[in-house]
Length: 205
Image (cartoon, rainbow, N blue to C red):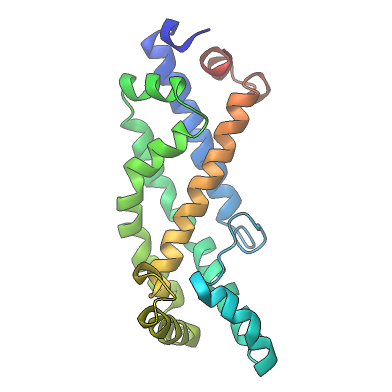
């Protein structure tokens, strides 16, 4: 059924269900051990030129340090992602009929764009102190900040990535929205397979 022919209430109901499914699936997938570290699509590596420079550290006996740092960053993201769920679901409740029709008529990243537009700023504010708490007791945090700070001065790292806490928070949200987008594409590609009559009605066009 064309999106323009949909009843506004049906469109809103269907999109809300898709949003909830996407949010819950993403949080469940990422907010567990190896949710980030074990998924190459969202695994958090070192930023900018530090990633390339890290490959050379194995020749100076520091590869273990790099591996530990990367593991720590990913573990921090895995710990804090579940805290995103309440804000994601609150965004679903704020959905308007106009929002719903726009998502149905949009491309296969419309749900992701909706969530990012509504939640990136408040989620950054919510998750940043949690990431700070998750990394504050690790000596690697200070080492990252020292290395990245120097790299920033040389133009090798963006200012937003010079702090490990802000970097991990940003990358955690990037991964969250990426997985939400994957769930959205799956629903659009096979609404019948979702087992939901309303999703089939709204997206099965």
